[in-house]
Image (cartoon, rainbow, N blue to C red; front, top):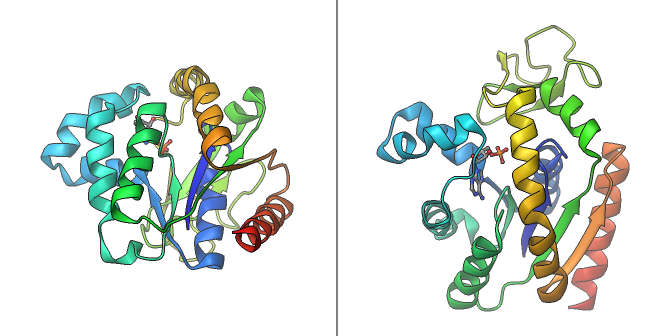
Length: 221
Ligand code: AMP
């Protein structure tokens, strides 16, 4: 099964996506994480996309689609994946549909929309800190979910870092871009797949509701 996580930055796609990935044993693929890794490694791709990410713009569709297709052909994706941050445009959604039709014809797709008011998103994003250990990647919030020791991950003890693009100016821009594309994107999934929308106020309850929905969805297939 391919689960597409839709939602503006800071709605919890990463946090919820990682929990679903563990519970459902599906690999978690975040385009933002892939892009940041390429930038950190200083690859050709990283150099090409750095300015888009720093300014909060979207990386062009062709580059993004190629990156995701390459990742989806890797061995750990055989059973499906949780796609976090992709697709972000209808062009990307269409490309994903065509890719799966061609390469994984029996796969099922479902979209989960995380719908959070914008003012809450800004608060969540500017207070977000993330574990620097890639294999952990735990996400904290300085106000609502602080680590026990400031700057240190509760789970693995690594240093916590703030993302360069998690500031008010960039998040406001990223939110604007999300709203420009989201109506059509959500409509695309409403028409083409199962779409489940939720306001993830309490993390545990949201995960529980999503997993209940996915169970019912699988049963109906
Ligand atoms: P995220 O970690 O999902 O918030 O993504 C961080 C940044 O990576 C975004 O602000 C975009 O610049 C870029 N990005 C991530 N996913 C995509 C995508 N599907 N399409 C275009 N740009 C993306």
